[in-house]
Image 1 (cartoon, helix red, strand yellow):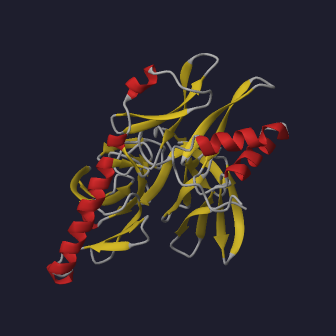
Image 2: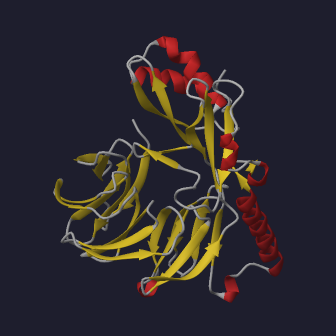
Amino acid sequence: AENVTSLFVGKFGTIISGSWDCTAKVWVNRKCTMTLTGHSFAVWAVAILPEVGIMVTASADKLIKLWKAGVSTHTLSGHTDAVRSLAVISSSEFLSAGNDASVRRWSTTGDCLGTYYGHDNYIYSISLLGGGGWVTSGEDRSVRVWRDNAVVQTIYLPAISVWSVAALTNGDIAAATNDGCVRIFTCDPARQATQEIQEIYETELSKVALAAQQELGGVKLTDLPGAEALYEPGARDGQQKMVRNGDAVSVHSWNMAEQKWDKIGDVVGAAGGTTETSGKKLYMGKEWDFVFDIEIDEPKSTLKLPYNTTDSPFMAAQQFIHKNDLSQYYLEEIAQHIITHSGGQKVGTDDG
C-alpha cells in the first residue's frame, strides 16, 4: 500500500482518490468500483467535472489524463514538472498547477487555453475564488491571489512550505503550512485579528524571511566558501566540502585518483528559493532531501540513491542494495557515504 495523496467528492457522493501507487480509485458507497491505471508516477491530484461524468487525474509524470467510464479519453501534456493540484471551473474547463510554478487552464477537449506565472517555486495547491479568480500556495512561503489570470496580491507566511490553500464560502482564505498551523486571511475588517496578534504575526514573518536569506538547511551561507574553494586539493580521498553558488549549496567529494572534486549532491532545505534551489528533490515522482549519484564498480555503473534526512542511513543503503541487486559488500560503504555526504543535515533517530 502506498500513500493516498488526494481526494475529491463529486456532486452525488462519488469519491475519487489518488495515490503514490500511480493509480486513482473511484469509490461508491464505500466500495472501490474502478481503478484508473495509466500514469507512470504518483497521482498527486484528482477531480470530477460536474454533469459530464469526466474524471481528471494529475501526476508526477507531468501529465493530466481525462477519463470517462474508467477509460482514458485524453492525455494532456504541457507542464514541465510534476502536476500537483487541480481546480474545477465548470463542466468543460479546469485549472492545474505544479512544480513548474505555472497554472494552466484546460478544456475537456484536451486544449490548453492559457498558461499563467506568478510563483517563484513549486505550486502545491490551487482553489477557486468567487468572481472568476483563484488562489494558490507553494514552496515560496506564499499564498497568491489571482484575478484576470494575474497575481494581484501576495501573502507571505512564517513557514517554509504552504502545502494547501482553500477559499472558504465567506471569501476568507485558509492556508496550511509545514509548521503545523492553519492560518485564515480575510478582507472583512470585522473578522480580522487584533492589532496585537497581527504584530506578533509580522514579527514571526520577519524572522523567517531573515532565516531564508541567511541559511540553507541550517547552515549559514555566509560561513561557506564559494566555488573557488574547489581549486584547492583535498587532503584525503572521500573528503567532503560544501560550497555556495549564490543561494545554492552543493556537496563535493575529493577524488584522490583523478585529483579532482566530484559533485555528489545538493544541500537542500532552503526557504524561499527557486525551483532549482528549493528544499525538495523530485525523483521517481516522490520528494527527497538528497538524490546522490552512487558509482558501482561491478557492474560499472552510476545509480541514483534518494535519501531523506529522517531515514536511517543503513536502512536506506540496504534498500538501495536490494533494489539494484548489489552485493552486501557495499552496505557499510554506501551507508558511510550517505552519512558523510548528507551535507551536515540531521540524521534520523531510527538508525539504531
